[in-house]
Structure formats: C-alpha cells, structure tokens
Amino acid sequence: MKWGPVNPVRLLHKNWYGRRSPPWVFFRSEPPLSRVAYVNGRYLSRRDASVNIEDRGYQFADGVYELCEVREGRLIDERRHIERLRRSLNELKIAWPLAPSALAVVMRETIRRNRVYNGIVYVQVTRGVARRDHAFPPAGTPSSIVVTARSLDPAANERLAAEGIAVITVPDDRWSRVDIKTIALLPNVLAKQSARSQGAREAWLVDQEGRVTEGSSTNAWIVTTDGKVVTRPADNGILRGITRSVLIDALKVQGLVFEERAFSITEAHAAREAFVTAASQIVMPVVRIDGRLVGDGKPGPVATALRRDFHRHAEWA
Image (cartoon, rainbow, N blue to C red; front, side):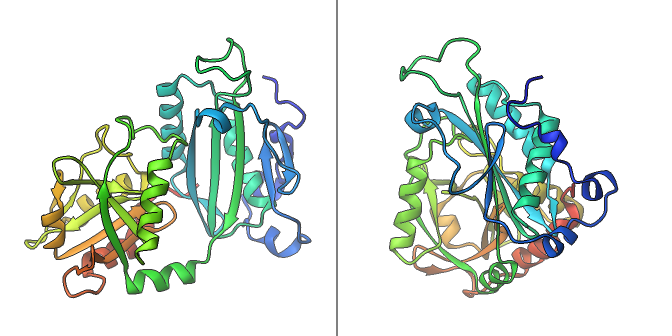
C-alpha cells in the first residue's frame, strides 16, 4: 500500500504503542508544539495545513466524518467509531483513504502530537480532489483525509452537567439519509444557531408527525412519568450514535426499563427527565425544553447515574 510522503506506521512512539506505557508521560516530558493536523499523508502545523480548493468536501460536502472521545489519553469506543465510518463510506461509495489499522495509528499519533489527554479526535474523509462535476470523479481518484485532535476541559463539562442544559425544538428539514454521518450539516448548523440565539444549548429536531428525531449534534432521550427510558429507534431518521449504543447496553445491565420508540414534543414536555448523548458530552441532562422546566428543573437521578457509570460500559483502547 502506498502511504504518500509520510508512513504513519513509522511514527509510532515505542514506549506508548510498543510497550503500552502510560500515554500521559509524553504530555509532560516533550517540549510544547503548535497544534498539528494529519492531511493526506503528512503531519502539518495547523497554520500550514490546507486542502485543495477542488476537494469535493469543500465544493459538495461530499464526505463523511467521525469524532471519538479521548479520555485519560485513551480512545473510547474506537472499534465502534471505525465500524460506523466503514458503513458511511460504503453507503456513499467512497474508498478508504488508508487501511483501518493505519488510520488507528494516525489517530493515536495525532492525539500524541497535540498532547490531548482529555478531548476529541476528528476524522474526515472526502471523495477527493477533481474538476468540479456533480458526478463521481474518474475511477482511481484518491479520497482525501484530515485528522485533528484537541483538548476539552472535563471540569467545565462536569459543571455543565451538574446544572443541566436547555433545548428548543425546531422542524426537522434534513435529507432522508441522516443515518450516514456526512459532513453535509447545514440544517444542523441552522438548528444549533437557533438554539444559541434563544439562550439554549441544543435544538431537538421534530418530524412532520410532531415526534422528536434527535438533536442537532446529539441523540435525544426522555424518562417518562412511569420511569421508562425512551429514545427513537435508529432507523434512517437519526444517526446511530455510538454513545447511544453504549448507553442502551448500560440500561440493560442496570435493569432499567428501556423503550426504543418515537416520542412527541408533548410527551417530552411532560417527562420526568430528559437528556442528550454524544461523544463530546457523554450523557448531558436537559432541564428545560422550549422554556418549560423538565421535572423539577434539575438534573434527574437516572441521567446523573448513567453519566457517572457510562465509561464502565464503554470500550477503552
């Protein structure tokens, strides 16, 4: 296999990858560097990293992405994220830019170079660079890949979870294949901005039947008045969130009553609890929907417990 200018396998740090010693030693011992991105075979300073103006991701949003949590220097649910990336690429008939095993190396090296101990790693793959034409480019056109990583503040996230967030509801006007994790996110952007403009953190999208599909960047959940935990089925109407999938496993282990079905705005307004899930937020309690208090207006015991126990059920790589 051809790797281009840089072979990511040769960039392994023996202590971390070969001997499995703790990754955080590198964040403390190495000199500070500017943020680094992996772009089509090269590790570049963020200020020097760029993509071609005829990249189909730039011109058509013709690409897919994944975002994976980094916790204590380790990837969370990497296998599930790679499998979802595989599905997205297959659905859009985009070729892998490099072998999945090599992508795993690149993700870790990008995390290491950016000194990320707690944060996220982002992978974006597009159909590549070609003369602008709506039809697919000529066979053999290499796909493009960008990998970045950045730190998040766990303490700030915990403070937010202790208070809970507000959400609004907006019409779901996206295309019918939102189960593919595509970079075509303009409706999500508009929904998120609508939420922020109204002092809320997230927007829940609502279909033509008045049922909640998901959030603009999260999956949506409620706890009903009789204690059932409910989220919409993972059909073509929502993205099959990785955090969502892990949480379903956790619910079964903990013996909570779980229903995978659609729920209405009216039911959400009357819920005992509500929360959202995403790789960057884990389980985030919702305390207000469309300006109305959820329950007593405080994070509920179910959401709080699920957030606390989530990583016991996740896969650590």
